[in-house]
Image (cartoon, rainbow, N blue to C red; front, side, top):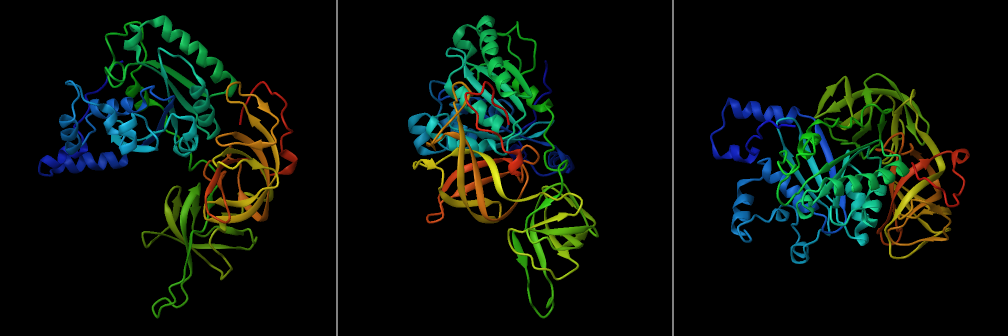
Amino acid sequence: MGLSPAPASFFNFLKYPFSHFHIFHIQRIINMDLLRFITCGSVDDGKSTLIGRLLYDSDSVSLDVLAMLEKRRAGGDVDLALLTDGLKAEREQGITIDVAHKYFTTPRRKFIITDAPGHVQYTRNMVTGASNADLAIVLVDARQGIIEQTRRHTLLASLVGIRHFVLAVNKMDLVGYEESIFRQIVADYQLIAGRLHLPEVVAIPLSALQGDNVVRPSRHLPWYTGPSLLDHLERVPAEADANPHEPRFQVQYVIRPQTEELPDYRAYAGRIQSGRYRAGERVRILPSGLETVLEAIEVNQQEVATAEAPQSVVLRLRDDVDVSRGDSIVPLSAPPALTRELEATLCWMDERPLKAGRKLLIQHHAAVVKAAVTTLVDRTNVATFERVAADEAQLNDIVRVRLKTARPLVADTYRDNRATGAFILVEEQTGATLAAGLITATDPEAFAAPAENALAFSI
């Protein structure tokens, strides 16, 4: 499938005086929709090189970076991985050990790319990177096929709610662009997709190093008639995951100037997590349960009739009610759960094992609540996707737990709302992050029974 000619990089416009064309182009970029995607897979599958190829071939590299690449040419070839492997340790080892973010724009859409580390010990970084992504590119080395990290990263991406998957079979040049090898890897991955109930998977053969089928179709793959990677990324539906959900807003800061000009001004700043808010509607303050009217909504110090996610706003209430940082303001028509017991899936990120009875803090956006792990329900075997009984969770384990909080927590399940269904666990004494959590149930009656070698894993 053909591609429209890629435009010059936005940064290249800086070489010339601004004109009406430039202003029009910049405004068009601002109004484009956004796709956030993550590249994941095993070490040396070529994730950094793939991102470099996307940026380089779509003319999305700034002039100063291009100059740096020219100076560091190796044997006449540009080292594309340098565009993402920014840490000194990464350059020395040739691996990615941190989460790198890159931004680029094509005539059709804006993109934010997250390059996740491949090593098992950096699973926590991968979870962090995938938490805001709409699509996951799972790279597989055509010479190796599906391996444990392929399965682990696919599992983690499905856990955090990613719906669109691309199976990118890379390094096809090293296997002679053989169709049968590609088809076998696709068949093997289909078994994983079926076990995890992945909503959508598109398989694309390519060579990131040679540029085959990344931005433009390749003459080396005549048997493949699907889109190039960039063509698919430009066309896949963007996840409008903020506004279809029920309205949610959590207070980050209470504004009380108490000046001569504003002696009685009181308002609540924060970001709308999901849905739409309207001035004049009745709202409830949680966890207190107090009710009032949303008197006004301010955006950039201007009153507006409505505001929606993900806007940062200031809300003013009609009544002088008690509202603190971490409280939620929600319409009466769409209340979230208010609970002291919840079930969640965790990616455990601490060297010290997790055991039942451990006390810690739940940080749910601005709200911080003391909690205890009452039960370790089960652990997921990454190799088989089976849930097995577990007495403890080790570093990078995926476990299901039950928690009890000291104060009521305002939350939704992650399935219903990614913005309000996620949290982190924090060590109370040191402030260290212990785990990333996804809420699976907020009603004890809906808690799942411990699984004994279950044959499927879904969320």
